[in-house]
Length: 188
Image 1 (cartoon, rainbow, N blue to C red):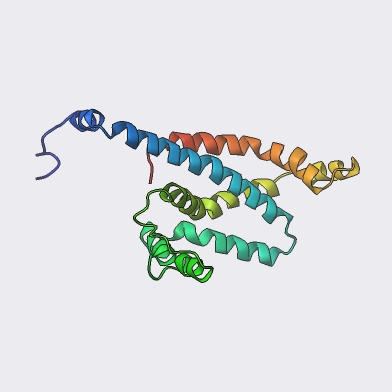
Image 2 (image 1 turned 180 degrees about the horizontal axis):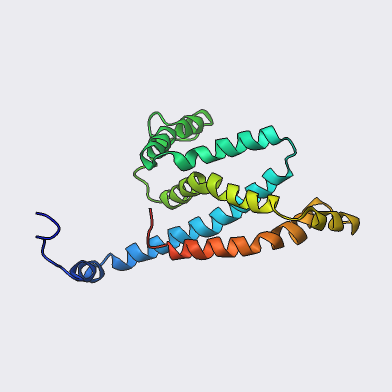
């Protein structure tokens, strides 16, 4: 059947979803996972961008940026293959290391305890490079006279980050977090 020949169902799909017993669990998980992605991912991306901005070797910065961007362009299917190769119960790298250290292997795929952390970790890892490049570009746009004034006032590197870098990128962080919150229900 074509789209024009299909029967109009209106809001029946939403009625079906919210009449099921799992509607609350599905909605809760979607919101909580995305809040984890947003909050932890933003903190990691800002921290990584600040570290990258401190590097003085431009070639290394470009190499690190390229390596960090690589996961963003990889398909979720390929990433799931990577995760399987790390967490496989019989041949996974993580279980092999655990066995070599005297621990027993864990069947990661049948134990739901670890999956919230694995999902959040993989989601952040996949998008970290892209987000950090945005924050890095913003940090590179900060007027150097702010840092010079902070040095004259006796600020060390940490104080410069805390009192110059972070306040200068707070508007960008706010905008990107608002956009991310708007995309919560468009979850991957």
